Image (cartoon, rainbow over all chains, first blue to last red; front, side):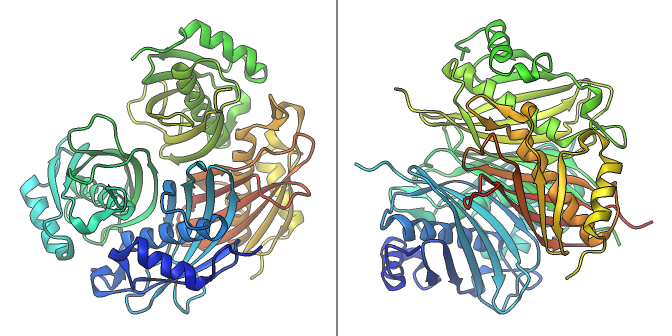
Length: 140
Length: 140
Length: 140
Length: 140
């Protein structure tokens, strides 16, 4: 499979539609099946005990599934999350970036299903797993 | 049932352990079974199309389940989320606060299970549903 | 709200489309928002330790969400489950029926979201919680 | 990694603890990380439209996660499912067995987290995905 956009195009699209989080996320790889995303961890993402907040990990899973869907269907800002589930399995490192690795399990006409493993960079064991369903708007 | 802390004590505890999000959340009610929480919606929580971001709703569900658990067991900052699932069902209003209503479905010795409905203030139909499992550390 | 079919009509419809499980399920109440379903527990549903199997509870949640959706849109055998999550919270009794209580959280044009609590008949604390998404086929 | 039991030992253990479903399931591979399980599809598992029932797929995911956990910790009949989520993505074939492929994402002292893809035998695209949490009883 091959993505319908390049990594550079996707990073530019992200900066355009999500200016609020510019600089936080970076697409590292996408090929229409697998997507790899980096989330830079900042001071305000941390929580007591030297760990990264749950909403930071949720946001990473969400954005990665969004990008994985765009990689297949192209720019479509109106695509929205309808369902997710997550398991938080290990404590992420406060001083390393998070890396998400997603697989596109189903790309239908009206929805996509992606699963995602999240790692503290450099670790072999994932800190969290997630699955996300995105609703894809009908073509005009 | 009755909560083991007052609403005022809980709001003070929240400000102490989560200074990063001070002023965003306010416990409105808790009785050991039901918990009601307000999330003030700010400019930086919004997304294109006049809606509230997914991580904002996830964070609200997470904090509400945390408070619902504390309402039963008392101050315990080390309690951590282990699992959640959410359905995003309707578009929240950009110009109203979010209100979460949680029920404590199970309080075990080592974990709690809570379900949560999230509303844009004043609406009857929920914008999202969530369930959260928290792990409770063993007593020393 | 009011269901578009009577309880007697729904029970007859169930026997017609699911002859394999005839006699296992009985709709007790439905009003377009809440649905109450009984699942008769048989010897073959039990598991070691005097409990009821997970698939029996999953099947009950699934059928209850299906009936709750039919209660709103009428007979539509092609409606299919697309997503579920469940928490198994307490051990069900081997010698009592299971009772499921569902709420219709969202009825959209193409999908429904239902949440369900499952009880051993006569107990106040639920044995399981579930949420189910059903896909509704487009009108011809 | 290596499983603590052989495939033959696990199949014998399954027949012993789940006589109700003897002959339905067969472990094909397990190595302490990946587990592959076959579910023979019978007439009574089918549903209208030439498909396999949801509870059949749930049961397969559940048993596969159970076996994947036993592969790591050894015979432990009291291990119980506490949480699952599933996406039903494609219609399974009525005339082929189901094959589940599981990965052990976390094996903790008190719980395991497994994710599972389910296929109609011979197809490349999965019909369902699941994740399962099992609670592991404390050592006496």
